[in-house]
Amino acid sequence: MAGEQPSARVDSWMWSVRLTRTRSIASDACRGGHVRVNGVRVKPAHAVRAGDEVRLRHEGRERVVVVSKVITKRVGAGVAAECYVDKSPPPPPKEETVTVAVRARGAGRPTKRERRDLDKLLGRPEGRAHPQ
Image (cartoon, rainbow, N blue to C red; front, side, top):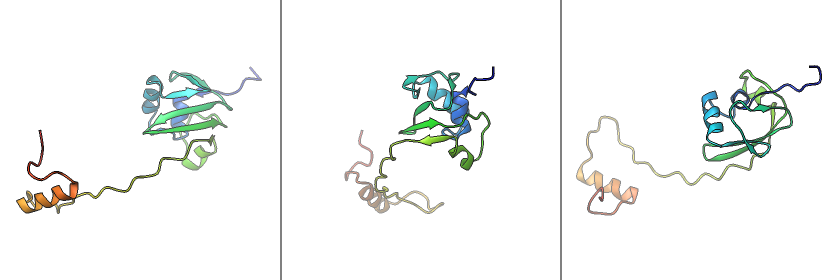
């Protein structure tokens, strides 16, 4: 058919343009109701065409992209970025990094003093280390 637009499965397209790491993650997101095409929840086999708006809730963030080119093979990041127009809201600001207590490998169990210092650092109450 001459006038038909090319289309691809939505899970395959999301994997091809690197919105998800694997195709199975994309399929699971579709089955879980985290993917919408033009405002409608879709199954993994739903056809996506140029001009469609794809919304993906993944890793605590919503991605909103408009399909500009349909591909089915995974491509490099530079080429993948040309296949959609990103209209996602900016990612939430990163909170200050939490101080992590680091011990040298092979240092053994912490002494009582070291454990108390760790508890202070982590903001645990004095007394019992692990309240029940």
